[in-house]
Image (cartoon, rainbow, N blue to C red; front, top):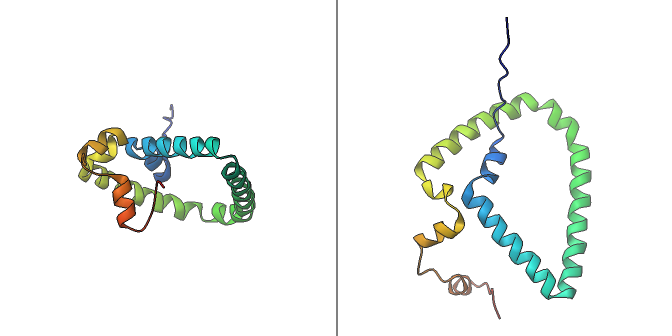
Length: 126
C-alpha cells in the first residue's frame, strides 16, 4: 500500500511572519533601520556592536535550550496546533492582516505618526 506524505503544520511563528501586514511592516522598518545606519556612522558602529552581542547571546541561548526544546517537542506541537487555530480565527476577524502595510495605512488616512509619537512622549524626528 502506498503511503501519502502529510505536510507538517507550519509553525504559528512562521505563519505570523508571513502575514502580509507583518512582513511588509518588517521590510519597511528594516529599510529605515539600514538607511539610518548608513546616514549616521557613529550610530552604525553602536548598532553593529549591539547586533553582534545579540547574535552571541542568541547562539548561546539556543545551544543551552536545545535539549529542553527537544524534550518538550510533543507539548510544543500541541501548543502550536492550538495557536494556529487561534490565528485562523484572528485572521477571519481582522482581514487587515492580509494586506500589506501600505494598504493597511489607508484605513487611517489622517494618522500622523510624528504627532502620534510626540503625544505619547516619543520623538521620531528632531
